[in-house]
Every structure is written in structure tokens, then in C-alpha cells.
Image 1: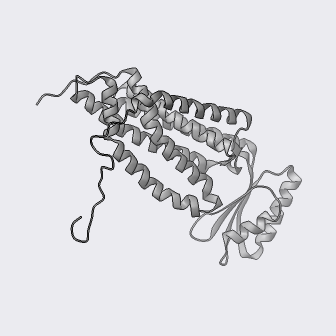
Image 2: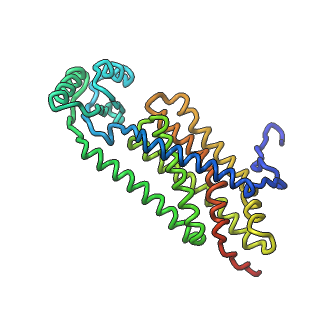
Image 3: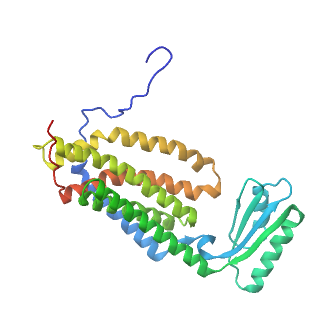
Length: 307
């Protein structure tokens, strides 16, 4: 501390820390297997609680003519007993988007549309009303899966070019682990799975690979620097050396997300809960999934550069 100012130490973990992460890998494998089994069983028996984006329904776009409250509109629409309703602001000029779940038949759809437009009345100008069929929802779901798959593949290719093919495969499996168990969380807790959920999953994949690359970079550096220690010693050393940065990164990210989780309301809860879970599971996988898998594949030691 100097005067009135003080600095937070960047190294939360002492340099002499020697946690045997590699020795605990079998416990981590068991925990990972348990997560996979729970996720697989939940997805197999319960499936996903698809949101309006993927199930289809009624889409109404309107522009406010006077001041309005989204909370009041949502409360009034829910009283109509039309099923699941998603309401959001679509711009700074008072535009809103209303999504209502697919009704039982055409007559019910027309009735629901008429009830909503009558409710909006003179307060809003109806800009667009259309029916999003289940085929469109299926197409959006498939596109979301493709986007997620391509993102994971691109991550693996990047890591393979950045390091070696063993690093790429380890990163691919670690990222797949994070994505799969996050989808399993949506199924297990019956959280609504929509386009925002896909965005959360892609964010988790990006966060996870960032953490993994930090560990991999130190592993490669130590493989070049030390020739005598065996792989277990080098991997343990590398994980311990990057542990402070891993904890700081996770903590600062959580500080930004937790207020949204606690005070963001029901519309943001599922999204922020998935992100919070993803931070923990991404940190876990970078240490206990990706790194041990890389050690198992025995990457080639880079040649030590001479001065």
C-alpha cells in the first residue's frame, strides 16, 4: 500500500503452490461422466423446453404512441390466457415485439391475434402481424445447432494451428463437454430454450476456449523450457502457474453476471443462469478435462530455442 492507494495482488495463489491436479483427474473424470449421464438422461426423457423462437407462434410488432410499461403490458397479456408470451423492446423509438405461442388451430390463432390487437388499441400502431409456423421454428433450431457446431469446430481448428493437433482435439472435446452439459442444464431445470440460449452457449464456448488456451500456452512453454520433468510434473506446474489468472478471470466475469442473475428479472434469468453455470463448468473443463486429455495424447515437446 502506498499513501491512500493500494493495489490488488494479481497472484492470488502463491508461486510455491503445488496442487496435484493431474493426480485428481480420475475424480474429475467420474464427475464429468456423471454430468454427461444426467444430461443425456434428461435430454432423452424430458427433452428441451423449446421457446417460441423454435416452436412457432404469433408475432406482432407495434410502435408506442404514448409512454408505456412493458411490465404492465406483460401482466395484461398473461391474463388473456393465451399460453406462453414473450415481450421485448425492439428499439429506442418505442417499438415492441410480442410473441405468442402457437394456438391449437386457425380459429384460435385468429381470436388470439384479434384480442391482442384490440388490447393495444389506440396506444400502439400495429406495424406487423404474422404467423411463425412450426417449420420456421424447426429451421431456426437447426440453424442454431449448425452455428454451435461450426463454432466448436472453428475453435478446434484455431487451437490446432496455434499449437498442435493434440491441443486442437483436447480443446474440441473440452468445449463439447461444456456445451453438452449446459444444454443438459436447460433440460434438467426445464429452462426455456430459445435463440438467447444459443447465444449463451456460444458465449460459454468462447469463454471456455479462452481459459483453455491460457493453460495450453503455459504447457507448451514449459514443455519447451524443461526437458527432464515428466509430463505429469509439467502439466501440474503449468496449471498451478495459471491458476491465479483463471480465478481472477472467472471472478470478474461473475461480478458482471451475478447482478443480472439476481436483479435482471424473469426475462434474463435463464440466460444469465446458463452463463453463470458456463463460467464454472468452463473453468473446470480447462483444468480437469482439456489438460488431462492433452497429457494423455502426449504432445511432442517443441525444440528449445537457442540464444
